[in-house]
Amino acid sequence: MATALPDHDDIADLFVRLGALYPPAELHGFFVGQVVVGERIDEKQLREQAAQLLDVDSFGDADWPHLLRLYQVAVEQLGGDIGAMTLFLPGDDVDLDQRVSAVGSWCQGFLTGFAMAGKQREKNEGAQQYSTTVSEVLTDIAAISQAGLDTEQSEEAERQFSELVSYLEMAVVSVFVECCSQARRAGEHPAPKQVH
Image 1 (cartoon, rainbow, N blue to C red):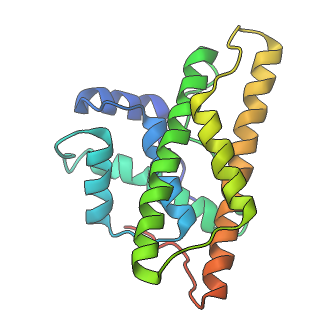
Image 2: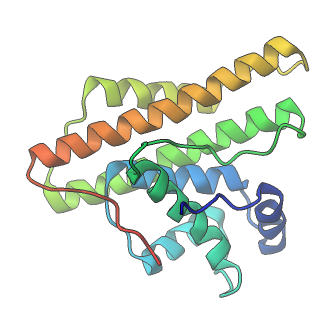
Image 3: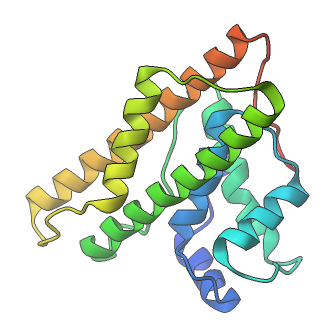
């Protein structure tokens, strides 16, 4: 049975309690960015990177499993038979401008995670040459991280937001497939390591 994403409000409350400087969406994007590259990350390193990203000293033993679940779900979603992704964003009951901001934060986290994992992969395997598809998706994600939507509460704005999220979810899967194909051509099978 697939692991479900944790409740967004619960994780947001945890972030407030920890004094984290960034929203939960950014941490999820960071984890997803690492998973799509296919680089294996052990739990200790993952915990340290997450603390550094959020600018917190450390996570308590009771808090870390809730955050680790974000990583585990990303691994399961991308590595599963369906190859699907669900962004970890506030629910539809939250104002559209806050959800748009969360998408921007998710994109920032994704780019950071992708870059960190890419550097590690380059260190382990040598220089990487990504496909045009991957380059275009990364360019799109960078643009989305800086841009916004017309956040006037309207059906059209909601539709645009929904389309943007759907695009990101599909784009992430395509980057994962491209990176895995590239690694296979290089003789490696980079199925991401599940952290327990």
